[in-house]
Image (spheres, one colour):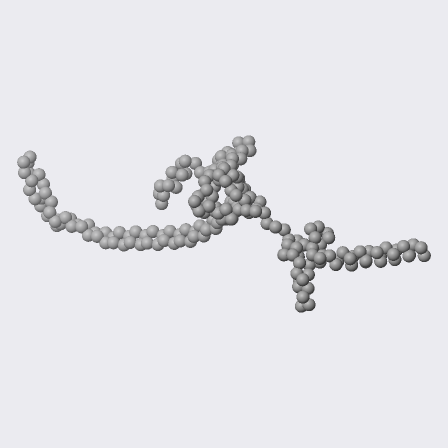
Length: 233
């Protein structure tokens, strides 16, 4: 019985303390001690505080970062392209020709040239020339490039945009990958985590170079490059 009375007394004291705490005028700074957010009602209930006081999850945005020359900004490159081309070429030429030799000449000694007689008539030749070329080609390419690189602010233009430049080299044994990137971005496009997407860069230039056994395995030799550049057929 004594235990039950102690339990009831504890509950009563807790309720009284909660009611007294609910009558505080306005919110407090601690999140665990804030009043339940309430909007002004029709009965003229006063409005306490601003939005940040009425929302438990409100967080103020950090002040805009001031970017300076030589600051580092991460660029997330995610470029994809797809190309499909289909072409057909067909040409045909046909011609007829006839050639007749009306006159001919012969040497008459050392100092003279006289017309040569043609007792069998004028020699002639006739023929037909036909030329036909037909070509059909189809090409489909899919390319993807995805990596993250740290760039350096090279210049701040008069309108506030940033000129970025980045370089990155990765070497694993004999395999070497070299990346170069240039572009211009706006300050407001930089995320709070100091990252900007490649699709937001103007005048974007990306260069990727590969060296090593893997590159040599699928690259064409100089003889094949010369053969393809001439286009014999």
